[in-house]
Image (cartoon, rainbow, N blue to C red; front, top):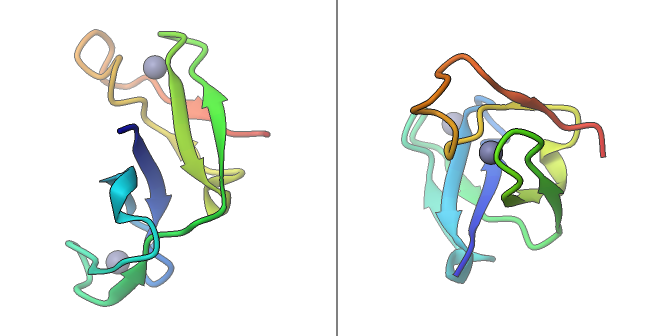
Length: 82
Ligand SMILES: [Zn+2]
Ligand SMILES: [Zn+2]
């Protein structure tokens, strides 16, 4: 199951969950408010490691740090212009 990247609608924190969680409500680990794991999403190929990242629609325009290249280059991030 791929992971889904989305953001908390309250505090804007970027969250990652397993795809099986779609539609569920979870507490944001940062602000503790309830967020719904979004159903509408798109794939974005990471230009750094070429992995397909599954992103919630609300992540459009966000800057995301690819977790897969994190170890090699901690400050690298991908801008989502889809
Ligand atoms: Zn939050
Ligand atoms: Zn990547």
